[in-house]
Length: 253
Image (cartoon, rainbow, N blue to C red):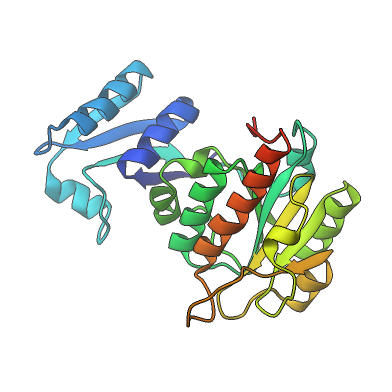
């Protein structure tokens, strides 16, 4: 039997209702809030035949203590984890674009990375099971719906999975502050996996060794590094720019 979890925030709840309405049991809306955004979510739930429960603020706060729920939440089935990147690559049309996160444990960073991944045409985000955050309610809220649209693949052995994608013809580019080649000098318009490590620690040794090339984001200020979600957005935009210039990569689906 599948586990149920609470999902909260306008974008996250609406994404669940659009992508997997059968997996949503109930939607909870705050009785003291009657603005257009809340009415839209309630209408979407009704359209998908999902029960809407109007609740007082005290109950919603007890259900979701210490979080900014925006007055809306839902009970939904936990999504089944994808554990094999081959399952994604088998159905991709056109040159695959993967984002690989090695050691990203902060849910806000993962949520922001998923949001950028959705916007910039990534086919999947891949991370190791042992050193990464899963799809928590915080991740789903920060991702603003992207946790429902971008597959998040948590693999047992990241180095072995990178070997797999290389065997499938993907060029693996790792972001490293000490690299000499700028990111824009890399060919990112073909099958590519972009690899980023956690801020501070960077990529682990085995992950770095699997990279075909290392690249750096040129920086002119005084800071030594960027937040991983910011760096991911820059890398993915460069890949998107090159793909558009080459006449491809317009849509991942």
